[in-house]
Image (cartoon, rainbow, N blue to C red):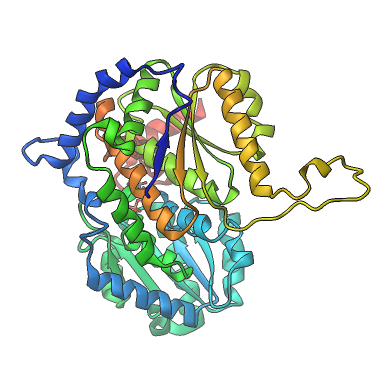
Length: 449
Ligand code: PA5
């Protein structure tokens, strides 16, 4: 089984006619992905489509060896990267292992810290302090090899590695994942002799978790990356039919566009498992950066229930009717706890005695779906077998493909991110980077008004 879409709660929001009408647009989006004669926007970034089968096997073996080396010589792995160069790895590690991975990791698993995904000195110095006392390695990840946030972090951690292990020793502990030929990181890695891994040209950052970008940190965490790839391959084989009635992935893409056209501007990705939190963050980046352009796009939001039923729940139930929810549920939880009988029953909970927490969690889900649907919030359900590496692979590929199809149906290029450049230009100008003098003067005047 791969990911299954349950749309049985959508009846009062979407008609069979709505689905029939969007089918031709889905077929067109499918052709954008598969028909080489169609010159689709972004078609030089379709490499992720075949990645689960068509990956570099020699590099895959090197990833496994590098992960084994990190596990044998490092207490800590520092993963430096931002956006698509970190979210996927962290999402899979927390999904499969735990959001408390660093606390509950098993013997042989290194602690893994993600830095260079902000410019916060507080966050960086905390990890820096931990690395002063432990053996550590660094995996620096940047497709462009020029992104400021990871570049600053790498400068700092490279200096610490060189201070601790010498220049040569440091080089043996640095793994660089970047472009095969271009960028500052590539030049530095080649000059210093770091082991390098490649982000393929035709795979964009947010679609890169199944390349070395995600695979090396995931393997270092002790997760079976062959299983992850097998799960992705399973989805790649399953979701190929352009007919939405035979393809849950395309149907999900179709339904979100239908809902968007009916005024549902925000999608809340919801899970009842806190270990899903970073998968939500990965989903938000994937869909937000792919669809949010040309003044269009569903705003991707997220929640963990029942936690957020005590914060966002009120809004979802009764606030502006601009939301729909996509709820991810699992047939099997990682582990379970049976609620014991208490002879005194002071808390009045004996009606739950003998029941498992996963049973109670499921009832919370069922009750919430009905309540939110009654409140005017369309709900779609994505069902997965469990939270294994295989299921992570299935889900990742399902969402990547749904995102590509959905973006094409929306009428945008799902593989570029022109809007991200704006803040960078301003930041460089304000920092006095050479070449930005004119903009620098203009911005200084605006800020001083
Ligand atoms: O999806 C994307 O392309 C972006 O989010 C990038 O992953 C992010 O900006 C980091 O870029 P880079 O890997 O070039 O440092």
